[in-house]
Every structure is written in C-alpha cells, then in structure tokens.
Image 1: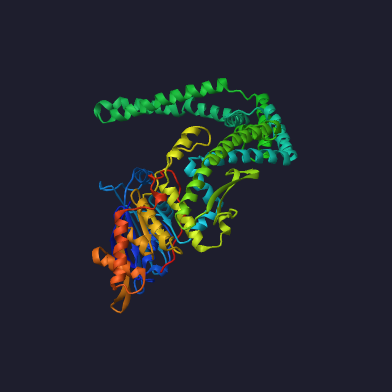
Image 2: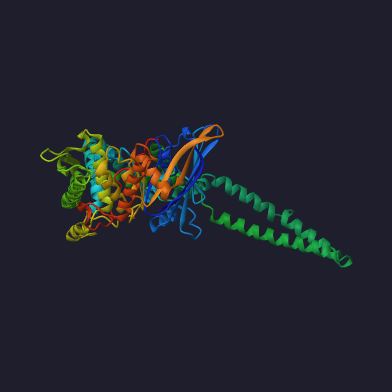
Length: 604
C-alpha cells in the first residue's frame, strides 16, 4: 500500500507531502491545477522515463519519494536484489531525482538502484490505469496475459517448450544444410587423429625425450669433461692432494695457536667432499654409454613430433592436449551429423510442446467464457445496456510460442450488433467504459466460479498449471478512465470504485461529482501564485469544504443553495451505500490477475 508521496520542485509543485490511507481516495480540482502531475510523479518514482521538463523552472533538480507498506513478495525481492531491508517498520522508500539536464538517479531503501529495478518493483506495488488504458487491451500479448493470469495458466512453460522445439529444429536444419561441410571436417579430424595415433604422443613425454636426446647428442663431450675433472682431483699435485698437504702442514703447528683448528676443520671437510666428487665421477664414467642407435631413434621421434606439431600449429608439448580436444570435436561432429537422432529429438520436443500447449488451450477455453460473462454484466451497469463482451480464441494456422490460438477481446456495443475487435470500437466513451469494466471485473470479480473451475482442472497440476501467482499490487490508480460518462453511469462507477476500495487502496483522478462523492477521502488540487510563480497545492476537504467542492464539480454556481443541496444529497446517498440492483451480489477480490494496463496519464 502507498503510504505517502513527497514532491519537491516537480513541474509546478515547490514542496508537497501527501499522506495516504487505505480505501478509496479521489483527487479533484480545476482543469490545469495539476491533478495528474501527482500521478506522473508516482510513475517517475517507479521507473518512468525521466525528462528535464519535470524540473520546476529555475530549480536545479526535481525530487520524488514514495513510501510503501511492505509485503512478503517485495521483502523477498529486496533481499534477492541485495537491498537493505526496512528498519523494522515494515516500509519501503523509493526515491528518484531528475536534474535540469534530464539525468536521473534512483534509491531503494537508501541504496542506489536502477530504473529497471524500479520498474520491477512497480509491478508488485501499483497498477495505474490511465485515460487510454484500453489501448493495452488491443495488444495481443496484454490480452493473453490477462486471461492466462486469471485462469492460472503457466504460459512460461509453453514458451520454454516452444524454445526447445525450435532449438531442436534449428540443429536438424543446420546439420542438413551443412552436411557436406561437417562431413569434410569430420574426415579431416579423423585423418589427423589416425596419424597421431601412430605417433601416440603421451603427456610429458616431449620434455623427457628432449632431455635424453640432449644427453646422448653431447655424450662424448660429457665423458671428456668428466675424465679431465677426475684427473684434476686424483693425480699427484691435483686438488685433493694439495688440500691434504695444506691440512697436514697446519695440523703440525696447530698446538701453538687454537685458532687454526677451525681452518683445519674446514679443509678436512673440503677434502672429504672432493673425495665424494671423485667417486661420483668415476661411477659416471663406468656407466656412461654413447649408444648411437638410441640417439638415432630419439632424433627420429623428435622429428615426427615437430612435424605433427607444425601441422596442428601448436608446440610439441601441446600435442597430446590438441589430440584430446580433437577427439571432443569429432564426437560433437558425429552427433551433429546424426540426422536420425536429431529428427527424433525434434519429434520429442514437438510432442512435449504439444502437450503443454493443449493443456494451456484447455484452461483458456474454460475461463474465457467466465471472464466474458462478468465483463458483459459490468457493462450493463455502465450505461451500455445490451452490450456483449466476448473473448475470441481463434486457432492459429501454425503453433506459436504463446500457444495454439490467438486471444482477442471483442465487444458488441448494443443488443443485436455483432461483436467486433476492441481496437475497432470507435466511441471514446465506450472504450473508456469497456476498459473500466474490465479493470473493475478483474479486481473485484466474484471468484466462486473461478475457484470451482480451477479445482475442476486441478490447480497447480499439469503442464499448463501456473505456479503460485505473485501477490497482486495493493494500490490501484485510475487516471480519468471515467471520462466520457455521466449521470447514473457515473454514480455506478463511483460505487464500483468504492467497493474496490474495501479490498484495495484505490486512487482516482476524476472530474465527476458522482465519483468523488463515493470516496472515503477527498483531496483537492489547486494552483496559485507564490513569489510571482505558479505553484500547485493539495488539501484534504471534509464537511462543508467537501460539499463546496462537489457543488463546484456539478457545475453552475458552486455557492448556490441548490448546488450545495445537490452535493450534500450525493454525499449522503454515497454514505448510505445503496448500490444498484445489479451490484447487490457479494464481491470478492481477484488475487491472481495481471494488471490490465499501465499507461501514463497526460499532464494537466
């Protein structure tokens, strides 16, 4: 629920705080006073396109804040998106600023957010039905969504099965069209792998054979150097003998100076190490083997490695990994050209799509007559006696992602006429009333039959049964969708909105006194001069002030006794709650219906 709206330097509003409550609230005022500015501000806070024109002239920026009561769905969304939870008061604050250059920033519970995130939040917070809400009802996607949500259909699963089917078809078509190319690639890879299988390179082998080849290739030099080193160690006068003699010379005089003991110890250690080196060199010479045959074999194998690596454009050490990758590519190509398996995959995907699409069609056909019946009944109370509303489910020539039929709203404006597509209904007044009838129906329809039909079909079961529907927004805004009507019809509209306000927070911008009289709360928007500039103001009216405003809306002299008496009578009749006979039956609130339309109202 929307608890409050705050505007600062927005169009002609300098600073305004609007506390809001549950029930049915109307906003009225003279034309141009700024009633729809408030709706525009709310839409901006919830992600509508920012425009520098909303900044009050001479000010650096405009700011709008909206305070909402949290529900479980919004709390879960905040947590999933990483936003800070509320401070324990169960509220959500959304704030948006727009500077004079048209750049905007957004905050959600004090943390920076994106416009996309604001729009996602808006889906869970507010439904706005503008003056041209009916236009959304001419779009096939919006019509399908409305029916599918009411029927509890899981259209998303049908779309997913459709995507699987199309992907399988695309794979089959690609394999068929590229068969020759893929076969050639398979043959090339298979040939390369056969050649490499004869070489059979092993991981880590290249480094080992390269090291062995280097040792054998330089074997003579290694032996000569080893013999020379051994001679320098062992011959008379060589290093070992010299160290021994030096150590013996010092040992003869060491008793005269203890400091020489440490030097003698070092020299004795050096003599032992030289003796170990001599033994190691002798052992190396005994086991050294030039083995020219082994060297020739290693040279040949290295040449084969190098040749194969050049063909595959990799280093010799990378050759085993290249073979593993080539085998994987070959397996993928084998699967890609297996048209028999691909054909079977297409048939299986088509069968799965057909099952869920048929179930979706069944649910649509079960619920379409119920919704049409309810909307038709609502039209009778809105001055369209004899009008008939229908939902046409025409089979498609070819299956589609959204199912097997086109969903279209049709209406016959009076008895005896043929229902036509909603988009072809010419009268603006009729269009507004049809949009209002649909909006009120989906939000205040008696659901006993709906619950019964869902139970018959097995709610939550089967491929086209939707998962639990998300909570419906608790706030509904009507921006002059009552235009083009009056008299008894206006009275009916007011009572319908008042009844909707018992289960939803309802806000309506209206010019109709009959609608305003039915509200639980009445806000009046006015404008005037302040400091040489036009500013907009908003006040709540009650008692005599409300009578004055209703009298003004009725036309004529708002201060005349007759106008005030008429206004008082409207308020008294609305307060008594006498509904027309057609609306006497109990009404519950639909909890599983998508918004009819969300359209921005024109600024006045």
